[in-house]
Length: 235
View 1 (cartoon, one colour):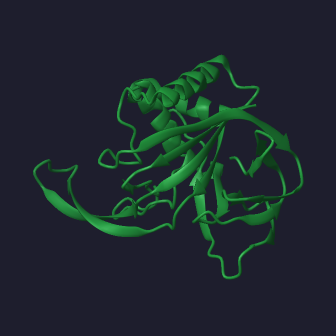
View 2 (tube, rainbow, N blue to C red):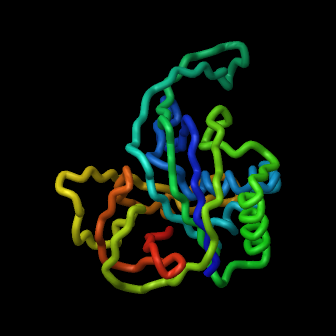
């Protein structure tokens, strides 16, 4: 399976949890659906063009994340216009991630349709050349993202085995070793599928455990090996 390793970072990020509309909280790191939206921005596909592509790319792509620094959040106050009255304003608090910094692994499944293959190829080409049609963002339009191409290659799927990784793992994996004593781990439940109404299907969320700051954990279960070297959980 084709794959690519990217470095994505920015000063701020916000990946809204849909169950927290009034005072939005953020997932701890970039979600798969947010990454697909970023792919659309790089390729210059607007909301109308992306609408039918979200369910396709959700199925044909898998991703993994390594969080390169500690997850730090803070609340910001924003002023939103009320839907009922365009002139009525109300301040809201929003949870923002400070200095998000990720190593992102993106995998194209072998059985992907031709549309997904073309999008993946064009996206990788643009990343190599440092090109983007629209400004990529980390969830919000006032949170611009920097995308750096690191390397491309291939993923090999392994059905079962013990492996160490700096990326997240799912709740289907069995924890074997936390490595460093006192290591901090985080928990999140992230969307992996968005339909053509821009709705993240509730039964397509995956619970994950992650480390940060370049730390490893050892688990057993299915995984993917990139370029015969690093090992990842991809969802």
